[in-house]
Length: 212
Image (cartoon, rainbow, N blue to C red; front, side):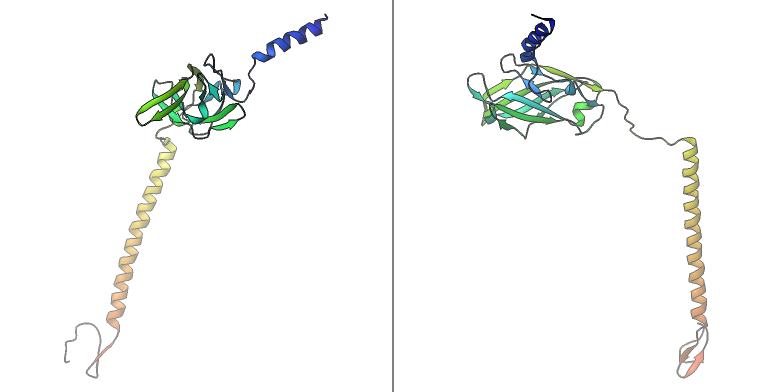
């Protein structure tokens, strides 16, 4: 056997161990492990909000002939700060012998940089009784460090500009009020100068009395 043939044989023996769907997290129903491809080793950056979606693939029938397509699929997770929550999967689809679904990552998942732990949980409930529950073992991915600004503070130069603008607004408002008052007084003066006819007698101003 040549070196090339030996290498080809080794590759063919190794290939079955690789992930069948490199763009999906593949669940092994026997070991319960979630095989995470490289593209999902990093979930995102701190404070990301619903911009990344993790795809999953799992055999439809597991355990004692349990059909996962008939169960409610959830993602139970713990963010890097230790806060726990769950995501209810809404897009389970059957594809041959497998089911496929996804997890849309919320800000609670990516709130802190570090390791995010998660499992896939499938549950069938009747009333308040759990009839079936099937879980994967713990999987982990990372959230990268980001930079979140709560309240931006203006620089000294920006503060000066803001102060100037506020002063300009105040000056303009005061001038507008003064202009209105002057226009009002001018209008009163003009109205007072209009002659008034009472009992066929023309009078000027506002000092005339009734019956003059």
